[in-house]
Length: 87
Image (tube, rainbow, N blue to C red):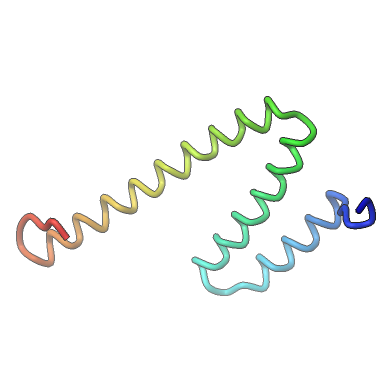
């Protein structure tokens, strides 16, 4: 199984190339998140406490971004209906 391990340089080249090839913004974000998850996994193996705290911090940031997007979408739906929407 040791032969399956990848170096940080290999992971960076792989993920960077995949992200840079993508033209769609949503998929570009998806591939960047995959790379983030990969690096976080390696960090958690090296230093579980730091991996945990970094994961919590990143999760909070992503939660805030998702909440903001959701609120904007809700406001958009309300504007379309001309009032309150519970869609």
